[in-house]
Image 1 (cartoon, rainbow, N blue to C red):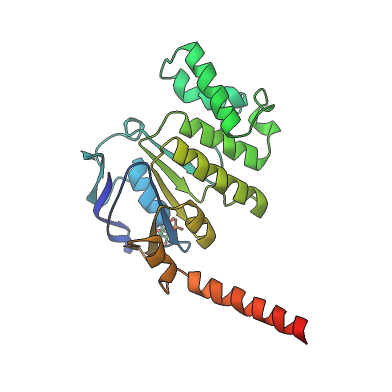
Image 2: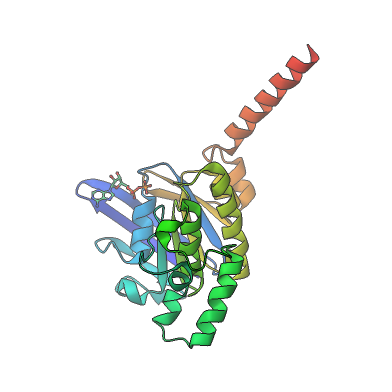
Length: 247
Ligand code: ADP
């Protein structure tokens, strides 16, 4: 279980998170939708251990994390710009987390190959990051994260800089692998469709206040999520299209 209890955070006079509390189960993805500036990144940074001055508590599997050093939390934080080691190849980047854990050479080889296949990076193994496209780099960053089975994967608009087609491919791949590998993810985005595609649970952040929905249906039916607006838009377009055809 992942838990946040009464998290409040300010920068100077600006309250950025207001009494944020939630729980969600392991092996699931909680997708939090929110406009830019609503406090999503700050919440992820608190989980990653990159923001220290706040009130409230966070727990992973019942273990209080607030005073645990970032490197000992077992979390991975990924954002738009994939941070890869420029001097390592694709397979060396993916296997990095296993190498520093002193895994056996054969096991690293086997798991890296499996991840390369899963991420459809076959044929790219020996390339260096500078030789990859944006989408391929992001795949490598995900491979490096997935392979070590983080306690929580923190994703901060990870596909924001990709073109729509590649973005959709990555969302689909993320859902496929995170389910198969049973990865627990906190996914923040300002993109409604992305939240709907990736989430098992849904939340909405507005001005530092987090609202958690009981179900996908509750999220879809809530006037604030924007789903109904979107449906109205498409219904209107379809009606207009039908009317034009019958005239
Ligand atoms: P989001 O991820 O939803 O775009 P952020 O968590 O990045 O929102 O930011 C929430 C608010 O906190 C914004 O108004 C932002 O300007 C402010 N903020 C974020 N980081 C800092 C910081 N280090 N110093 C001062 N203000 C910050």
